Length: 436
Ligand code: GDP
Ligand code: GDP
Image (cartoon, rainbow, N blue to C red; front, side):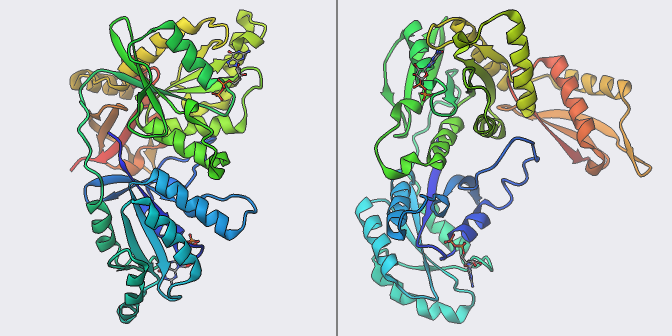
């Protein structure tokens, strides 16, 4: 199910990034620091009470040297296009400025719900001064202080109140949804076309739940698939579409709705920094991942080159060691038949549940093989393990002291679990918890 999207809009320095960071909190930084994975803090998940949503900090969308007004228009446009609810932020210390009025005009025309936040209201006395902001025409202004974290609860209550009702998607339908991500020109559109050309397309181009992707269902050997295609929707001709961050944002939305993500690499141009960054998003989102080396027709293919290339991919994408690598050519369709079976397998592994007793046998065998480490004379004791979630498979290991679970030992347990159950294509998560 798609999460609601909130965008924070306003002129520079009103405190958008400060609030964004507060909303997002340490959600991003709690992710282990994986080499090769860079985070873009422009779009991230946040939570209020029990509601999960995504936030866009439009202040992070920079358009080179464009004048301020052009930048603000572009940012407002991103918000209007992408968000379900817009937080319009002004500075309570400055009063209403001309730039605020410009933003207000754009938002007004959009028909999106707008919640007005007056920031930098750092103490209660200053609340008296916010009434002038009624004249912007967005109803009650909500006083907040980004630095002190004040007023955010009331603001978020109002924001969440405007979230659209989502129709419940059949959660347990066994359709496999996958998307293709990669730099421009790696061959995403070509691969979509080749796949759909080959399989029988039941209904073509059903509009997606969002405007930034086309969902195309197809069937193969009685299995239903949906391709979430963002590539075909490019070039709507707006100024911000040219920005890299915008395409990342779109890729992130597609990833979120996917079970399996195909991370494409162009064999002709080789692996580039941007490839690692983009693939990193799929990894961080906990999706099943397949690395697709496209344009294999341009490489003189002998077995040896494939092995060499595989080593190169592995050393560049170390954090994706679970992802199978598929070599193919979207253009000549060579080896393209190898892809869908991998998608199916990765998806099954992503949703796999293992038996608790077997899991515990595996853990105990692992302990016997490689006794748990001691740190400063204290030894890690493992009592019991359980799988607590799927998509991706997540395990809790109950221990005497979680701090004693060193990263390398956790890695060792992960490898044992992988060997025992075969989780190819999917990340798995292991959490150490103190037995209470
Ligand atoms: P943005 O350009 O809208 O993203 O604004 P920033 O989040 O970068 O904030 C601009 C400046 O305002 C920074 O120096 C912040 O520390 C400051 N600031 C943000 N929120 C508050 C607040 O609630 N009170 C005060 N006094 N300063 C704030
Ligand atoms: P996208 O931007 O990722 O959607 O990439 P496109 O599908 O538009 O492809 C970019 C270019 O690469 C086009 O000129 C394609 O014809 C070419 N291309 C795509 N796949 C292959 C392939 O497997 N082999 C070769 N030689 N060219 C390809």
